Amino acid sequence: MSTEPTPKQGIREHLGQFSLHVLLVFATGLTIGSERAVVPVLGRDVLGVESLLVVGSFVVSFGFVKGLLNLYAGKWGGEYGRKPVLVLGWVTALPLPVVLIFAPNWAWVTVGNVLLGVNQALTWSMAINAKIDIAGPDQRGLAVGIDEAFGYTGVAVGAWVTGAIAAQTNLRPEPFYFLAAVVVLAFLLSVFLVTETVHLAAAEVDDDDHHDANLPFVEVLKRATYGDRTLFAAAQAGHVEKFVDTLFWLAVPLYLTSEGLGIAAVGLVVGVHSAMYFLQIATGGLADRIGRRPPVVAGMFLAGAGVLGMVLVDGYLAWAVLAGASGLGMALLYPNLMTVPGDAAHPTWRATGMGVYRMWRDSGYGVGAIFIGLAMEFASAEAAFYATALLMFASGAVVYAWMEETHPEFGTHEPPAPASKAASRPAGQD
Image 1 (tube, helix red, strand yellow):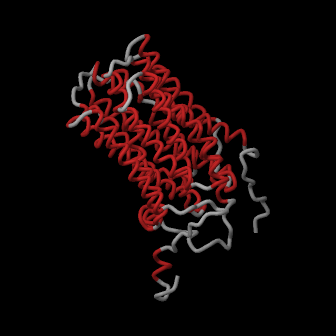
Image 2 (image 1 turned 180 degrees about the vertical axis):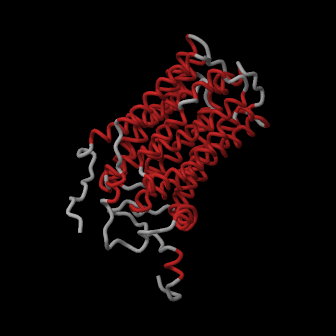
Image 3 (image 1 turned 120 degrees about the vertical axis):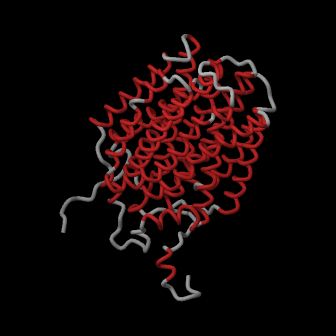
């Protein structure tokens, strides 16, 4: 029998490593944010892309790659540890600034965003899993809230900084020098300062734990996709809310510039939306006290209303206010949707379960880009806003009807037994 003491979880007990992972998720946000305001306009004004559907192709490539790699990032993080996957994620980002600076046509940008999708899947997946490892069950909502707050603050800062640089210089190469500095620094921090956290997740395992402690990968995939109604509600909501994120990445810059707003102001409007995500520190902590379901339901409807309002008003200030309102809705729903599979998963397969949720969530980038691109190409930019808002309202209704509370202290959610266990029970028994 081992005499080694059980590792103690807690943000305060591991503040140095927790803070380092906060800094790294901020860098992950800066990386994607550096594309938000500049790249769609670069495609239209420099590379000569006329089709709005083609402009959206770089988000499609990003979304589907990130969604698929999220699934395997969680699996690899459980098998090999968080740090190796994190380092690999930053390695894949190193060529990205070079691609964006020298891309002779839009196809290069689309292929380059495959690298961005890999980077975001591996680095952000490991950032959130490491924080959950460190925090433990009592601070899980707070840890997710901090992770998403600083990550999306990075998105906001990246969009604002590169938009400002582009306004003062050119659409390229200058904004992507900033991106290069971020990627190199994050890579070095990951290699030399990050330590492994997977042993902290193992500290949560009880030798007498319940029947689903060792679910195989396929069983986790089934449960987190359709085998559990609450997890299905979370997965579909995560998928649809990415349409809002895609709208602010793809349609909002093109719509606002077509309405006469300058690139620096567009960067600020997009940045205001993302900056509201910083409130996830508060909304994640709030969910530790009142449960996950109420902020998720409220956030789905508020984000949809903010998107709808943006095409019903005119003017810089009004657009910024409504962008902020939709961002506040996202701050309410975003960390708490992700905490749902974190609550429902056993520690031994939590990274995989989170990966399944993140796969369905982030594939929403790809589906959303196709959906929004088609709406803009064959109807109007305004149609993309109307359709996205409608989908958010419908998805929010599914959450309201089907999602049970998963908070470990006062939740109502009871996970189903694995299929193999359920099949072995006599008929009529629960």
